[in-house]
Image (tube, rainbow, N blue to C red; front, side, top):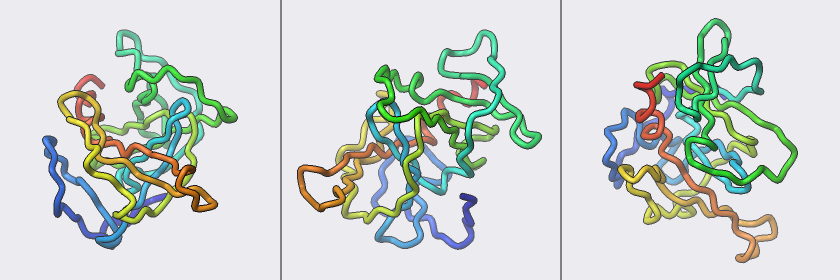
Length: 184
């Protein structure tokens, strides 16, 4: 899932943010966005595909003493010491995951965090391209309140029935990691 940033343009049109992110929204074209979708508890979330480097299965994580409870620890990822953030704890989600336990670590792109960082999630469900018309940007949360929501993605059910739409919260992972990068 390596990205080729040179092939894509940065589209900041219509984006309002309190955070001065080096990369707000990166798309292949102006009509769609690509996401990595994942589960935390029984809720679904997404981050921009171009803010990630890869998805791995958790291996040995060494705990860090005297760190916030959402910092799971560190691991050696091909010679790089990588800090692992438990996104579920960071977001105060207490629900148990209802599927088979398939914990994954999403390794973030170095443009998002100045240090190697991975986010621990319950499961990665897919990599999707979503039409801009299926994203509600009016649901954006205030960054200073800690919600860090860029928008809500409406994903149609397989049978196209309106009542079976799945709502996915698009997270501003840059703002979330920027808050904690000084602690790690």
